[in-house]
Amino acid sequence: MGSRQPEAERRLAEFLASLRGRAAGLYILGDLFEFWFEYQRVIPKSGLRVLALLAELRSSGTRVFLLRGNHDVWFRGFLQQELGLEGFRDEMSIEIEGRRVFVTHGDVLDRNFIPRVFRCLMRSRINGALFSLLHPDIGIGLARYIARRSREQGAKPALVTALREFARCKIADGYQVVIMGHSHIPERVEYPGGVYLNVGDWLRNFTYGLLENGTVRLERL
Image (cartoon, rainbow, N blue to C red; front, side, top):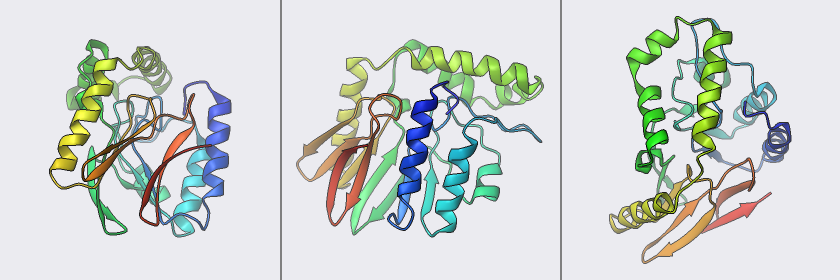
């Protein structure tokens, strides 16, 4: 959200609305926003409809987890307190239908220069404190420009390989399902003992993962 692609946001809203009464849990693996920063009294205005639908899902009984990506790390309580969302960490080790599942965004495995620099800027508490001194119109506008440059770099083959190898190692450690994003390339790979799923993105592929009745599937809207 905030990437100036209203059609993608509209389709996401339709998808979320379709989950009412159907999903026990929804896991958003980071980068829900092109950029997110909470000032003391100000938040970005992008994606209001989607945020309202997430709140409705939470009220209807679906637990909604939001992990941190490399574009949205500066959460300060608004989404937790006002919408009831959970998560807000880099990774989670969970159990779904008796299966050990590891979920993370995956940006820590990206060794390309611009994503690494962008991650360092976003993760620095000093940078966060300095950024909060900027007027929101200036700060959010500047950050979105940098975020778009980072996203436009695209996934390199080495990143796709690194994500797969990381998943293979996690499965060897006892996880039965490993789910990541970041590369924006959807795929499902079976390894001895488990499955790796990359959920792709919601800008071009409109893909998501589904864990249901013991199966792990890659679905496309």
